Length: 288
Length: 331
Image (cartoon, rainbow over all chains, first blue to last red):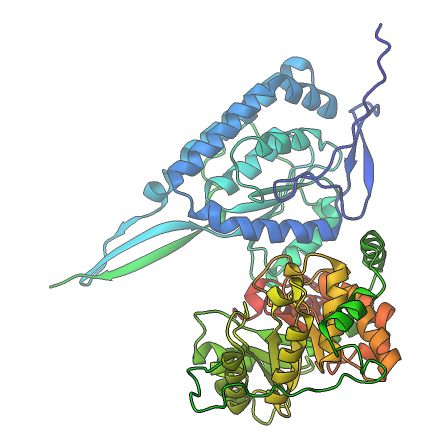
């Protein structure tokens, strides 16, 4: 029996490479699956979302300008650091999602493997999704995928780590920067992921993690003129249509939410990489 | 002393001696008297100044007040480009932006002035004719001020001849810090004469003055010498315009008007990049000097990137959603 005082945790946001409190000063209680207190998390406001977009825009040049090989290395490094936090992730996933320890471990293993899988894709996208086009004319014509820009991601509400990794890693692998609204009820694996990202060579601002309510922040991000795409994976089911309509105002790329949260352990394929890539085609005149 | 610009000029042209306004007629009589006066000014409590500005910076300006503040700040901007790579084309595009900062919104006010180097003042003059927007030119060997007085005065006359309505001069910080206050004073007086009808803004370059006490002394010196505006910085030195420096300068112009009846303007320049910074300065002006200074005639903000941030905030207020840098012009 220890007579130490409990260290009660109040987590903060991960924004522009730093860990600020919410501009609004709000926090909320995070509980485990049975309702027991786990920690306090910052409740992000629309101004935090605005600051996150500014940070993501500023980081876009560096991240999209890095070589695909370098991006792959950095993402692999993230997976390495996640592996070092394996036990902590397992504990948080088990508590938040109410899983047995073996199922939590399986989810964390799958999340880290998923991250490694996407890290491997960075320098293969050009070959798989681009290529030379046969055209009827004296041109060397080729297409290549380029990142869309700043992507706002509403992370899945139920699967707090595997789901988060499954929507975030493809955005990064393509060279985009991200503003992520985490699962509201289960934000702790995302908070830990923020600590992982901060210590793994990822430039500040490439990923910004906002713990809070997707219903509150979603409209601001969907309507924001400087956001290029939104992934509505974790949007409230009854509001996806409204968010899509708001996103149309600035012709964003939109990934619609599935009717029901899918089984994230299935093979992801390229379905979450391609929506955030733009195809650039070059017509290069050839001498006759 | 002869100089190369005008070898035929009398060797020692008698500098114009202009008396400072009453009740300070006597303070420039000798270096000793001037020094006694400037060092007799009340000392600045630096911790107090920082605390006061920190408290004022917490004021929350929202909705209609914010809309007013944004439009006021836009109308107070001296839209500035002071790069070695400036071209007539860049100045013309800046002038176009000065006239219609937000081309999609005709209710957006124009800025107060366009600030350029003296050789480009003519280009700016032509591009802004008939708009009511002033042309400001930096002169006197900006930004260092390290040139002989003859060169500085020629620089000023050249800029005025090119059509500048306002001259931004730099003081000789070396002389000021060495205690040669009368040299600094005489130089400002000479430049004032050379300006003719043009308004004179005196740049103190507070980043090189080290202490807030020196900022207060330099402010008084510049006002006694006849400056129409006192300006914090060239923008080439960091720190530039900070709130405590601005506070001290606002107090100086307030006290000077109370003592002499003459109102002097203030222009912070450099380092004001966000709407929040600009609004904090407006709050400071209102609280320290008073609403008399809250017009473009008496308060200016020297800036370039600030304007875009103000426009983004303005668009946010009008449309209800956040705008992005794709929706304002790249300078």
